Amino acid sequence: MRKFDTKVQHLKYKVLREVARLAWEDQLLDHIIDIPKTIVPGKIPTMRCCVYKERAIVTERVKLAMGGNKKNPNIIEVLDIACDECPAAGYEVTDSCRGCLAHRCEDVCKRGAISFDYNHVAHIDKTKCVECGQCAKVCPYTAIANRKRPCQNACKIKAITIGDDNAAHIDNEKCISCGACVYQCPFGAIMDKSFILDVISMLKNAKEGGSHVYAVIAPAISSQFSYAKRGQVVSGLKALGFHTVVEAALGADIVSDSEAKELVEKGFLTSSCCPAFVKYIETAFPTLKEHISHNLSPMAAISAYIKKVDPTCKVVFIGPCTAKKMEIQKDSVKPYVDSVLTFEELQALFDSRDLEIMEMEELPLDNASFFGRIFARSGGLTDAVLQALKEQESDFEVKPCVCDGIEACRTALLKKSKNVLDANFIEGMACLGGCIGGAGCLTHGEKNRALVDNYGRDAMEQTIQGALKQLQ
Image (cartoon, rainbow, N blue to C red):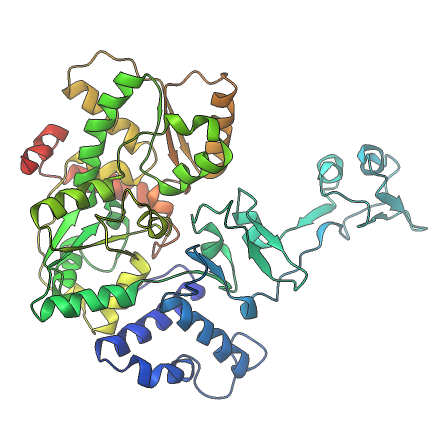
């Protein structure tokens, strides 16, 4: 039974599970120092030089599981003690260099950084090299490699640099909290802060007669918890103490209906559903900021409706996205969403209560339409907007540009900023494949897109207006 892609995720999960288990029992403060030994027992190291370093790293992970550094506004943090194993040499000449006669690498280097020794092997002078990569492009043997760290390769907006301490550093002004570095770091040295203790507190308070707690589930759930059925996940949420489980996809129906009208009114829009994409526009393409849809994201839209119906309730969004943890800190969203959990954290919550969800009965989850549910994958939002226009009997001609992954988003936004992109609607998703590629997913796979479409076809409502009738 495979619950996670990597052992890094599994380690993160074990820490979250133990923190949650102790929190349920009101024993966290008394036993917090015991968690590292629980996670790393014995005296034989399995990951690092010694168990003491392994436990020290787990201690830092515990801090992140409990909310992290309150002085750091970013949801993504580097565990300095864990970040020390990766080479960061930049461009290097490998053993594949044949000492050819062409010397294309030397000729293309405008800084004179490349020379040849007596064996005719190329060398790069790091004091002159500016990391332009031209030498690597022209080498006929591909003998020049770029030794970038995995986190730097993952971060397509170049928010990560390597400091004098040889550890990664995140530029909070550039960071869009997409979590790509979290998922790609092979040592787990970068982690998203967790609000799992806040959620447990809400659920315990609800059990004692306090406010109801609603779970808003992202449509990407259709590609997760593959060892159980979707209805059993709903049962598990109920067993944890959630009062009601609502599809964020119903919020997607709200957004697609409103966004279609806004597109007709303004003539050009960029989508507002992915908070990382929105932040990227704001920081890297400020001239396009005015064109971001003024609609709330599906998460916030359905949460606003829930708060209208039950004003004293608490709302927890559960999905694949680390950037949602930043989104709920925005003034426009804060009144509606009280906390965010990733699918990784939900798995830890289930196991902290020893819930075997695959043995539970199936409960229904049938709030949204087909089009709301397919928001989870790239292109789903565009399909939904086209459907909304059709249902509104609008003859507006949509020229969409669908982008998944920040590199594709950058290309589209750059072209649009220079007026060379013939599109009037840009759907942007920071993660490859859309939300199904989010850093907070348990697993990532080729079948995820098909699973989302199947989930959409299972919807009771096949039209957006049919789903929205529930809200009237």
